Length: 355
Image 1: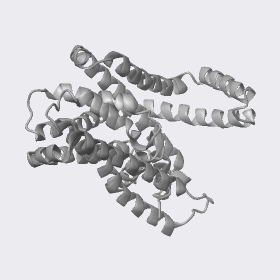
Image 2: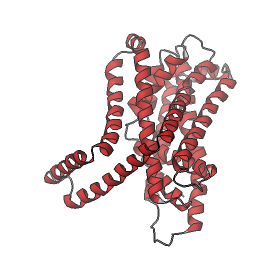
Image 3: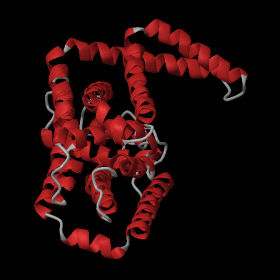
Image 4: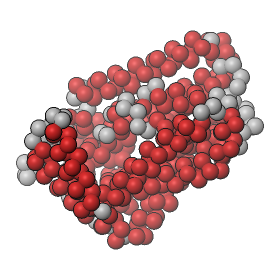
């Protein structure tokens, strides 16, 4: 609970820092003038993109669970998905969403193995879709951004390689289980020798158990090829919808010079290079990279700062507010349900709500 309060404080602090920077660098008058000139139908379209993004997130989760848990209702999947959005937003590396979702799914009657299987499968598919979409956009718009953005190739290449490595590791963990086990054991023993942690045998046992679960999950996912392909295609649509938010904001300023593909490419680059910043919501880093990539599109004084604030409000703080509503309701429902007969303990600390 204390951890959540700290994370929320960090999110709000980062937001205030960015707002302060925008007001200081752009000036109040230019921000007000640009705000008054906005076409709010396009802002509504940007909000609509986020709503559609959440809906697709819920649909993908639902179709991953449904084949293994026939009683699953879409409304329950939506609640779990939105609660996960909240915890992903307020925890470093978006690490809090899946523990909450697994625990809440279990309280809804879904077997824990089914919940973990579905969530891991969904994460793998999302990561593959992100890498493929980003790679296509990078190829299509590489020349443009190399001319417009200094050090573009170096910055984006690092972000792309990190996401590619994560994707390959996820697949490698499942496909090359024995090789992964040997490498992991070697790393654990090395870390124990340099006194990073104690009890290497206990860590190895835990790692072996988790690797078995992950491998079994991957095998189950591959067996249901139609569901996997359907989820993959929906994940691509979901990513494009999310990447379209800056384009809607761009149009709200009455701008038309830059095409849709170029702007969603810029958004994909922001996602790639900021996704591994170890601050809740990639605070400051996400805004910094948005400023870096989008300054060429919003050239009039005050436009870039206002666009940054609108983008962050719609894609991040809006998610926190709406997601918190579902997370609070879930938390109350869990409190009423109490512990199950198997003697499960309380949810992990990072999935508990602040008072």
